Length: 213
Image 1 (tube, rainbow, N blue to C red):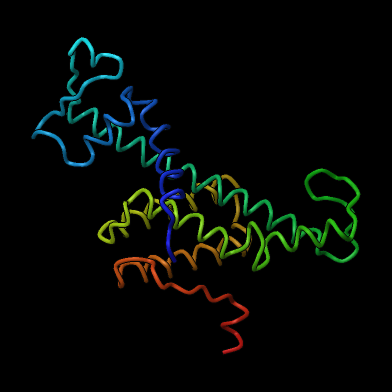
Image 2: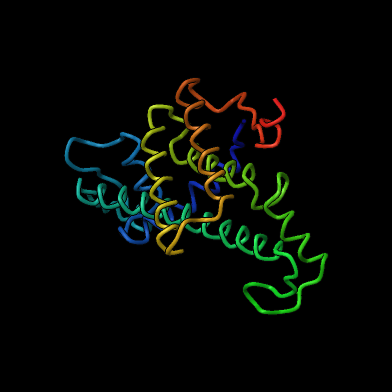
């Protein structure tokens, strides 16, 4: 499983933008601080738009910590959003699969057989909200945000767990089984990453293929 630089940049930018808006520093400033280019207590950088005048601003340890906390919160929210959307897709598919149901669970509109099939396929093996697709999406984010550093696997796992818990809290009950299956698959990938140093070579095996073995 190889994460392209384009995917890495997209997820990295999405989280960094949300975090730096709250802290009040630019993404470049925070990235420089997080990369280790800093003194013991403060980072010194040229604030955007002030390079010509030579003015500098110090990024304190408190500012850096605030940036990192906001970055983690942004990431967790992204996980929550993805899981919630998958849960909606799963619940819709379950409802439409019930015998004799002819109305959409969410909109109360008449549902055609084609629409019911589309809902089912959306959480299938090749569907947008299937186990493999969502697990891959989330793991791409984890690799991007950690820079592929296997030493941060448990940190990423904890953040993902938190996102799933938040999604469950919003539902007020257990999430659809498709979400639980996805969470299990994500943990398998974390284990593989931790053991092998990367996700390269990981092969997804669906529940159906496992049952045949």
